[in-house]
Structures are given as structure tokens and as C-alpha cells.
Length: 428
Image (cartoon, rainbow, N blue to C red):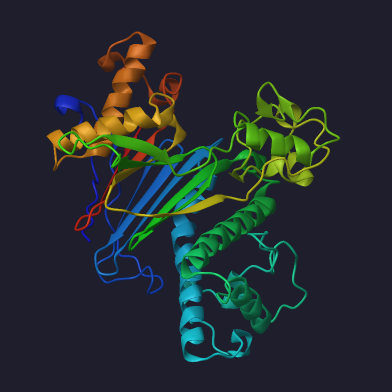
């Protein structure tokens, strides 16, 4: 498996850059599941967006994360700085569990050794939060454990990853959920400690989209409205000379525009007549699920806000959920690539349009950067919609330009028997 990362962008025809360069690759070490001596990681920013793209040729995996922040950068920065490492830790715990079950049929709770490696040298007791939110089946999550010993945390985290009745793949999805729950718990704790001095922190939030490719299994975890779209060949057609690709959305959209999400939100607050105001949750947010945004989840965080910033009649919080959607897709010989993007991309292009654009570019430019091309096409369309030239749009200061297009992050994952390339670019 080969991994390459696009880390910078030269402006259209050599002029001003409309794309922010990625930071220099760095070495990453986590669990053996997400660990190799040749790991390369690139991270970058586009306004309030944050992006991570990590490739490892030795272990045959690829990790991509897109964190689309809003009301400030703090939440997206927090995710970019911690979530990858946290996922690696929980995967290491899962791997430890598997090895223990392979060597012993006894109950794993009798095992006295926990994985020694934890993020940033933290004691496991400190790291595995006793207040993790519910992931799937309320095994240990959603309730505070009374014990505070290292052993109690060992038992809780290990039991939540038990494999006796679930496959390894399901264990991986649970690791992703546990890691996000850990990140949410840690971030909200930080906000609570600092909100008196920085009340703006209670409004800061982020969408989360993680894609993990390991072998032929493509895992997605999303919270919010970023998307992962698979391009796959329509092998039901008989015309092999003219391959027809179709788009398959791998993620759900967590907004009030989705009828299922809207119905669930209304059902959770039957006594509140003012849940959706002006097409937004409590008049503030179109998202129904998000990371952070404590003022829509806890009354005491809402109370630190003043004036019009404070939500009136916050009668039954939380109004924004943190439970992500997760999926597993088994990559087949017909799958060609995956487009991972923040919602700003899909303000201008449908899933089918994005797939067609990427496919045509790859056919004409097999060694080119399809993510960069997609963002160039987005800027062209944004300029056309605004009735101005591309040059004029680019000349508008970044803050004012958001009137015409959102911050956008795009990652293209090329799938194939002998090649898997992640190309990441971000726009200003």
C-alpha cells in the first residue's frame, strides 16, 4: 500500500494561492495497530477547518480526519491535537484484548496487565474517563463508576471492548466511538474550567469525520454534516469500455433538514414548543449532533453567556447530541475512490457531480492532485454564482469571502489493489 500526501498548492496559473499548504509531515507513534517506523502525517487548516491525513505503508492502514469547526477554532484544534492519538490508544487496548483471548479462555477481567502505552505518558487511570457517554449498549458508559482505582478503569474499558459476541470490525467501530466520547468529555471539562474567563468557549463546536482504512475494511465515523462519498463502478452494465461510476454516501447528515434527525429531536423534547426556531436548534444551530457547543448541552454553560448570546428557555438540555454515526464498508474490486469533505464542498456540488469531476481529472491527470482540482472548481463556481471573476473573488479578504463560500477541506482516497493515495488540500 503506497501513501502520498499533497502538502502545498501553487495558485492557479502561478498567481496567488487560494489553498493553504499542509504542515510538514511528522513522525507518529501510537499503538502497533496505528504504528510503523515510516508513518507520515500531514495536518493543515482552512479557516476553522482542521485536517489530518496519515499513511503507513508497513501496516496497511490509512487514517483521515476532517474537523469542521464553527464559532471559533478551539474545538477543531482540540480534535486535531488529540483524537488521532486517542483512537490509537483504544485500538491498542482492543488489540491487547484480542491477544489475551487468543492465549487464554479465562475471563479477561482476571488479567492484571493493561497496555503500558497511553497518550502522552498519561496514567491509564487518568486517561480512561469514568464518565464516558453511552456508545451502543450501556455496558459501562453513560454512568459514573464509583471506584477510582486503576483496576476499576481497566475492567470498565476492557469490558466495553469485549469480543465474545462481536467481530473485530465491530470492536474497531467501538474504539472510534470511545475515542470520540473521551475527546468530548475532556473538551467539555476544559471548557467548564475556563468558561468564566472565556465565555465564548461554550459556543465553540465542530463537526467530526474520521475515515479509517485497514486492509479491505473502510470505517467511517461522523458527527455533523461533513461527508464521505464512495465512487464505485456500476458493474451491472455490460459496457466495459465506458465505465460508469456511481456515488454512494457513506455518512449521515445530522441537521434539522434531515427528517429522521428532526423527528428524533422533537421526540426527545416533547414539552418544549420552541425546539426549532428559524430552521435552527433553539434558533442557533442547524446541526443536531456536534462536538462541543456546551451552551446547547448544559444549562450552566448557557448561563455564562449574556444578552442575545444566551439561549432563552433552555428547558430540557442537551439539545445537541454527541452520539456519532458509524459504518463499515468492505472495499471491493469495483470501488475506485472516496471523497472526504466538509459541508462547504457540497454547498456547490452534489455527490454525483463530485464523483464525475474527480473521475475525469484522474483519467486525464493520473499523477495530478484531484483534491486541489476540486477546490479550484469550487472557487470557479462560487465566483460564477456571485457574478464576479475568479480574480475578484480571490482578492476579497478571507473574512468577507465567507459570504460567498464556506471554509472547505477535501481529501481524496484512491482505492486499488496496489495503490491507496490520500491527497489533502484546504482552502482559505
